Image (cartoon, rainbow, N blue to C red):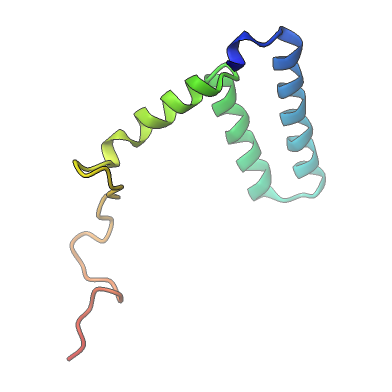
Length: 89
């Protein structure tokens, strides 16, 4: 289990994430920079523990899982038909 790893290992994981953030900044890619920052925040919230990360992901996904286990995203169309839903006349 990852949480049992020595402190040096978790520091190493943090350093590699910091390196990736610095690399994204050098390339001046704001999207990559934001993604790596979010990844670093999520990893820190899970204390670099893979089991804890999976638990957090399950909790975050729970509202979108229906009784059959399928992912159901919320309707963001405000009841309007999208192009893929329109019937041909």
